[in-house]
Length: 235
Image 1 (spheres, rainbow, N blue to C red):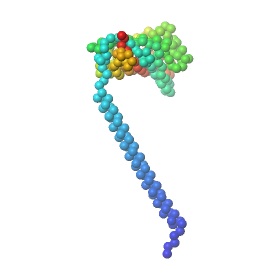
Image 2 (image 1 turned 120 degrees about the horizontal axis):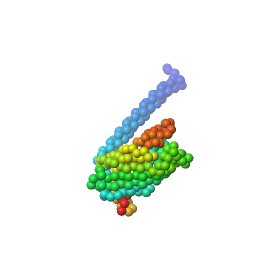
Image 3 (image 1 turned 60 degrees about the vertical axis):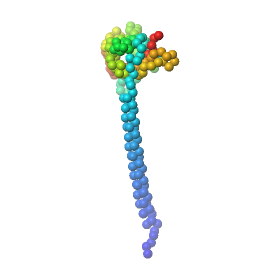
Image 4 (image 1 turned 90 degrees about the vertical axis):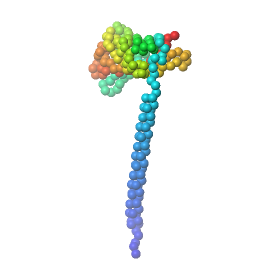
């Protein structure tokens, strides 16, 4: 006759519980892995679907904008730049006061032109003391060079919704050619007054030292310029 002790019962029960926990953990891990794979597949499928949809959507066409003069829409025009600050951050500066105008030739878009005049003193870093340094002779020297200008010399492929605009950029009296990558976002009518309107996004890379504002080598010389402008037709 065998004797059943508390110990002889406890050990098999512990073994059973451990085996059960291990199996449960394995089941949970398997389920989590399956869920993760399913989520990844779903995300990939969604990304592919969005890419296909974007490819099928017709690009904005500048030829749909009536020929004539267009000016930047107040409150909907932005010029900003960013640069590397000793590897710690990329500060963002912007100019708050500028005029941009486009002469659109819808039949021959490559003959269109762009002019921009920036009030150099309107630079805004969000830090007043830094702004005072930026407008000094160390950088933009606005007392002697109050304006920054850009005049286009060539436009290409804008009819496909994306293209390049090349022109002469002048900062501190130094003029150099600059090419911007431009996306024509939309051509349409203003939702309030019905005037013709179109919007663009553009970006380019500059070097500070090319334009006489390269002081302090501990700060990156390369500057990324980002432009967002809505242009309204002048009646």
